[in-house]
Length: 303
Ligand code: PBE
Image 1 (cartoon, rainbow, N blue to C red):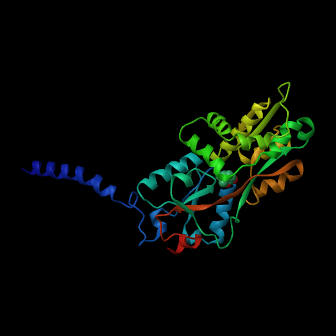
Image 2 (image 1 turned 90 degrees about the vertical axis):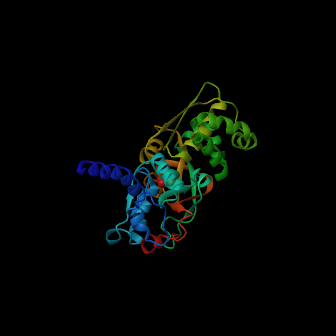
Image 3 (image 1 turned 180 degrees about the horizontal axis):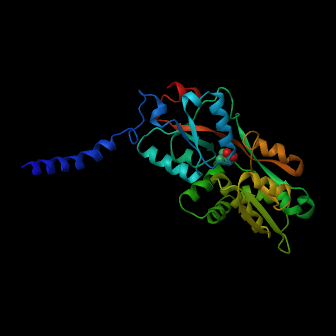
């Protein structure tokens, strides 16, 4: 008899424990009536430690007094880890705070909002600049001209990113985008003759979704004009160093004026800045719009 009772209780426990734990705060949806901090373990879900946005976010944690007693911390990971954490949280309507940026497909796939930044830590708008090595104009005037004329919009960049996110290879997505946007591409290649003799051009970039898109598109445009183009991904600092030391010819991934400010300051005299290839970019912490009470950096500690 006693043994049977024990078995019954045991079976009950096996049934109930998973139900209870499924209801625990880890998987519970965002609750606007409770403080945010504990709902996300005071954690901002970040990307690769080398990203400019990561150091800007450390500054934000200081300036908005989110650290120490308020316990907020920035969790480094990678873009893909961050977006998959976001995907899971979003599906369950859970609280999450991420290091966001635009253009990026995350803003097309999910309803997200940037937090208001009254202390202007992240700056207002960013642009993405094309940086080339010194001497490129003389050595490869055609490639230089294409890189100089390369200019597109956040929505055009997002189109390529969405295709890659949907499973296309970046190269295929770039080729298809070029086919569909002949007019735009014609502006970039205007006045440039097809290169002869297979001149080599090397582009370096960081493997963020936005830079995967831009680098693959401009690389393909250069290939179509007869250049032998290689692209290589690395961390941000070596990207700048590669162009400064002429190990690479160019990068189209310089987020300015804030995000890459440190590298720009270090390298600006050793490279040539061809100006913006995209305007209207933005960087900052973002949350899903269902987190109705969280609208500003101050809300992270107060609400
Ligand atoms: N990002 C995307 C980069 C620039 C482009 C915002 C992740 C960064 O933080 O450095």
